[in-house]
Image (cartoon, rainbow, N blue to C red; front, side, top):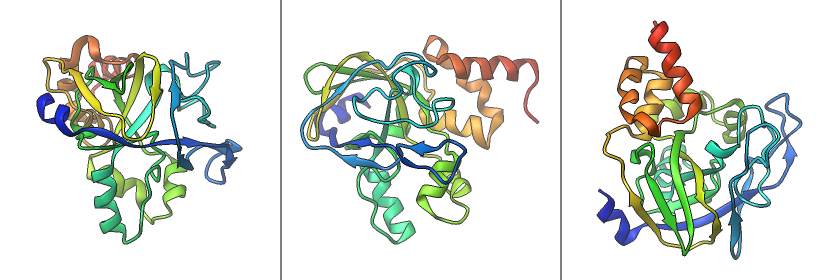
Length: 229
């Protein structure tokens, strides 16, 4: 799996959002309107969700710091190949950054990456796959498609949140190397399905062991005490 990605994967676009009014949530502003950047962007661990720096990308804005950002959601990656599918399905262009992703990738099956998988980007930046993106009201309003949350969820390809293992810079065209693949089969897509529509899969997520981020671990503990119906 990793070897195929090593030959072709790259960052197609690095996208940063500035604060804009958010009519879709109680939060006053949002950074979902990500725009491709020229040149390099510095990436570092932002710290805790509350009281930290928000996004891992310097200059990127996060409005809802109660539910987004922090070390385990420092960077959001989404595959250009999946955006291309959505363009055909929705019948309109979707420039890189349209789904609020920081990194638009090419040649990398982001939603099939495993919890704990590590990517080296460019010369020094190293990121670790942590969580699937769970669609929210801001995303629904931003896309402006009736029934969008259900439609996106049914596709089961949510893209991945990543934490910063080694800070560095990233720019369009940087190669992505998968430098570590854990020995379990718990993918981002599997976790997404378990958390949204197929709760019976939560037991399989536990196989990721130490690669499970804290919030997901709490959900697993709650499920073990009282399985979702």
